[in-house]
Amino acid sequence: MKLPSCDAVLSSFDKEDFVGFGQIAGDQDVPMVKIGYARGFPAWRRYIEETAVRHMEASIRQPFLFWPLSVLYREEPSGEVIDMRSHILDTLRVLKRFEGRLQTVFRYHPTTDRTLFASLLEEADYRDYTVSDAHPHQLISRAALTFSNSGSSLFCDAYFLGCPVAQYINRDPVYARHDEAGNPVASLYHPDVDHFIVDDPEALARVIEDILAAGRSAVRRDEAELDQRFPVLSDDGIRAALAPYL
Amino acid sequence: MSFDGARNGVNICCFLKSKLMPIDNALPFLFQAKEAGLVRRLSLVFYDRDMPQLIAGNPAIAEAIERLAAEVVCLPPTGDSITGETIGRLDRLRGYVETLWRLRPYLSGKVLTLGGPLGGFVARLAAFNKRVFGGTHLEFRLLPYSLETLRCFSGQIHHETALLRRGPE
Image 1 (cartoon, rainbow over the protein chains, first blue to last red):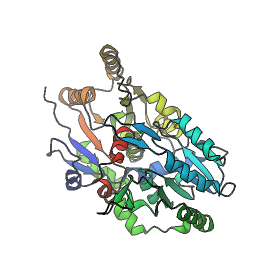
Image 2 (tube, rainbow over the protein chains, first blue to last red):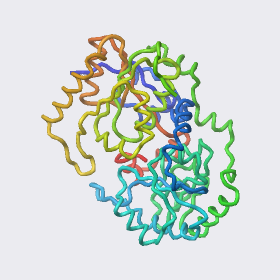
Image 3 (cartoon, rainbow over the protein chains, first blue to last red):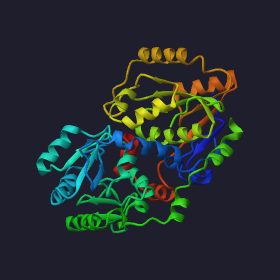
């Protein structure tokens, strides 16, 4: 049975941009309603702020680094191996120098192997941390730095919310854009990453020192750029966009 | 913030894949749509993955759903894409039939069906609602990136692709 197509697609981008990235399969005639950067809607941001104190653990201490975790180790059916263990260990050894001055707030992803992660913390003898269940936006809004080895879509949210963003990878730089010679030159999330550091623990330590000295003001976001890159519809805008379909 | 007593808007039945990224993109939109008076009554149907397990470690998501939705239905998970385990066809069919029965008061008249990209049972339910009840069917294509960021990693086919497919951050 051929299913009727949907009446419209609610999208983050204009239709030509989505088509260019192959994000629309099949029916190209479906109207597309651009609603922009959904995570920036003010009603959501108010909710997140209203509930932050209740959802954040009492053990979280300022200043803190927010580190959203993802897959630590996995063998893919294709034979590829995702292995973040050495990246994480190298990072923890740098963070160990800042224990007592900078807490790390980890957040598990459903794919994170918690037993393996505990063993990495033990191996690095890292103690100054909290594992949080709070929403990432609640943590980003209060963090001195948002950090990840592999990168995360949360980097985009951190950029939007004015939190400095750092990514550290070591000698296995697959989570990067490379130049023609194969050298890692930028994060996959490049536009949203303030500090992209490859195999240089001292550079990571300097970034952390700078953040501790200057706080979130260590980075500045241009409001006009944010409006352009992360368009957020107003109530009137969302009503106008959806009016034909309601 | 409370949405009790909303007089305007339409009834929405929203199907969402039980994964963090679709939920994290859809909930902000639904909050704003409700505040703008576009939504009168929201039914949330989660499918594909184990929603109770996902909510267990996400109090902000759980509370947001509680505030937004008049009713929440969690379809049984269709399996684990990492281990390759799937639930039996009969169990899945039973879950779908039970869901249809529970949703029947809302699958008539002006109903908006959101969710996507849709496939299988959910696509057929949306099509049924559109054809039989004249409902409107909208799909989400919401991504958590700016266009510049999407452009940056769209050329990458390395591990990141696998990460995004298997378990978005």
